[in-house]
Image (cartoon, rainbow, N blue to C red):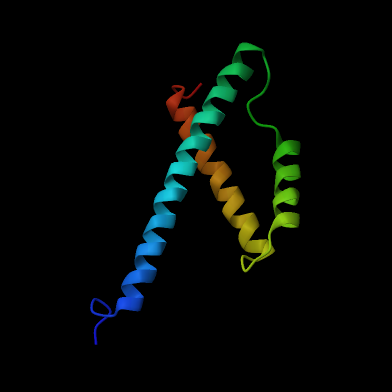
Amino acid sequence: MSTVQDEHVQRVRREISDIDTQLVALVNKRLGLVAGLKRYKDEHGIGFVDLAREEWMLRYLQRSNRGPLSEDGLAELYHALLDLTKREVLALSGGA
């Protein structure tokens, strides 16, 4: 039997696709919020990046993580998300 014919495989793949769609929607929502926050910070002379906040948030997420994502995996995911967000928001704002 191929994976195309396996009902269990197809059901799990649909669930994964649904989650991936939700993740993209959440990342886009996050980007919109960060872009708005950057505009506000720019208008008020506040620096865009807040390393203390980023580290606090990572520690908070690590405390709330119930797995199976490892602490190192969570740190990698969070830093990748932060890097992506910063690049995307800077691109949206014309690199300012």
